[in-house]
Image 1 (cartoon, one colour):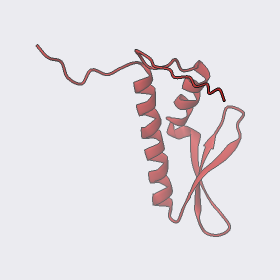
Image 2: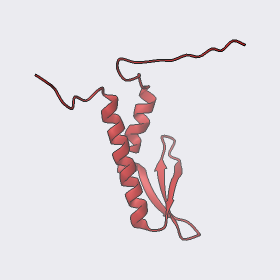
Image 3: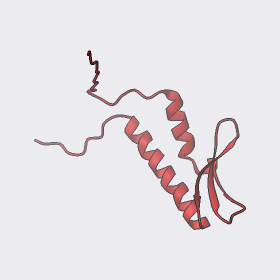
Length: 94
């Protein structure tokens, strides 16, 4: 039996496509989000894509929880965009 495996390593972060970065930029803007109430009484956080379609992302019991989910998603994607710019120096030595 012959086994084949492949590993990869990077000296820097892997290259992200511009399309991925554009999607993250859209996710990181609150104007592209909304909250709708569903027939069962739950609230759904939705995101508007480039084709002007609303996509349900998550459901919560209260409006406050849905808004908190949106805010944490925005924070997450802002962080991903910042990290996509390259490594961040956190400490240097002399």
